[in-house]
Image (cartoon, rainbow, N blue to C red; front, side, top):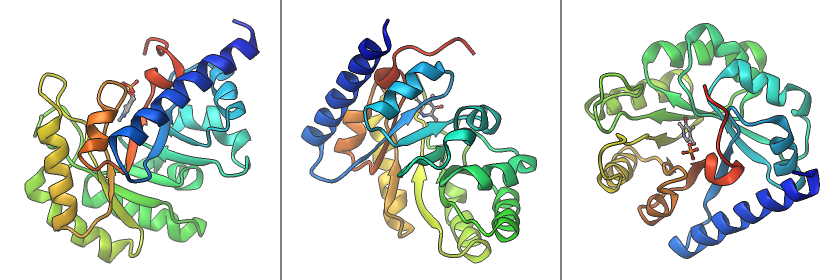
Length: 222
Ligand SMILES: *Cc1c(COP(=O)(O)O)cnc(C)c1O
């Protein structure tokens, strides 16, 4: 594909997603274009279309994609994959929002990194709404304690909750649960919905949707 054709394709995907979000919800929803495992030419095309908000799963890959582009006007980067505490400093240095806080230790290492670097990303807590053993995120029953601890340790920057529903279940009840938990804990941000279900998430009150393949096209294999 020529680079113009690629930009046109991604611009069309983007316009269609934005239109569907607008139809699904009266509120302003942030479209996070998930650029993990996408070729650099597609990232460039997305920037050419005016997209400025991106999500990445891994700190190292995010550095490869974004370090040299960090000063693009309006660029906003979300970390949406699991975070190892030894990567906290790199994550704080690069990202504007870290969505995958799920345990006290990571709150402490992020807080230390923020103090050291003089830079404090917003935080979301990831909730394991399906209580799946293999999945990251705090169990719903542990959320209130983690919210409290995060507010004490890293005051002022906890803004929302994030979830990834189990693949083999309808997503609606998980989105509803996340919205309820956010309300109970006085949090506004709701990061939920991916390529296959962002419209549904919007109907359940998502403030952020994370869309990869429907935005960019299929990813490269892991
Ligand atoms: C990869 C990923 C996405 C995007 O997935 P698509 O199905 O391609 O939209 C969203 N959220 C998280 C946490 C992801 O890891």
